[in-house]
Image 1 (cartoon, rainbow, N blue to C red):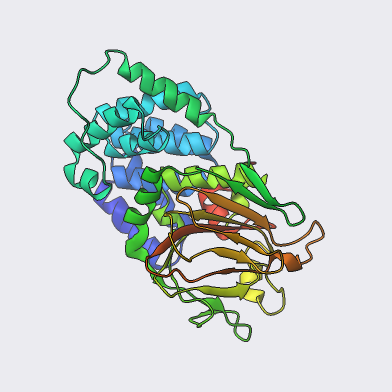
Image 2: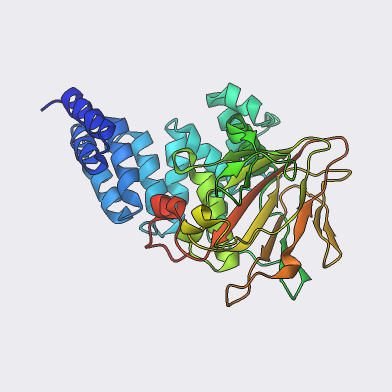
Length: 376
């Protein structure tokens, strides 16, 4: 059977709601050499068994395609199949040199933006993809002699950054607690997230206690882009991994990242992130209670826009790249009353941030992207 017939059968199975059958046909089409089918099947399987996904991509007829190799590396690294960070770093640089622009963009997220290595890779992006470079505000590197060992420097810095663990810069409150992590994202990563996902923005909603469904309400007047599994990439997975590490929770227990934009005057009035099992029944089914919250500021707001904890008399000014993590419930699952918080309106500029809520159990998002095999 040829690729076209396999894809046709997969589409028919998908339309009838038979996902497993659709994936069997995509697996066959991928084995025959269809790149998109191979990747669709590999990502579908990766949550359940990332090692099998990596093995499958190794065996398809398009296995030598650099794009396939990039996605195999992504699945392997975040599925904890590929654990040698030096090899991950070398492969990213090799794939970038073969024209896989995503590999260079990933590399930039692990390099200091003031370093010669960042400038070197940014220059390669400028050469390969000038439009992407312009969108991401990547400055053209100054002309000068390039260190002959620059590639090795890139590999060493990438490998070191891949191994890095994050510690809180300060504890703003010990009782809740509220922890601050400074510089968790670089300016490049912040701009990347805004640029890539802002097209998904929709009016933010709150949960209607009568229906359990979302509705627009004056209590929350921002815009939100939910970064669902089909939109996830290396950099969103990297952020998931960081949040998992600092909160000591499995990645599979996280909700999807939310990109938020507050225009001047917009706000999120005082509220709890913790759910009420009765009133939020539909949301509660997906992973049970929201036990922790992570807020990552993507820009610095000069006036207004603070995250407020009224019961603790704490005000946190949005500073680009900083992350705030706090608990919503105690060890018994009871709501922590001091977690009551708000997003104050900014005065004259947009406020951008990413939020992630961590649940008590595995979420649909977490299961699809990471499966239940991941510990961190």
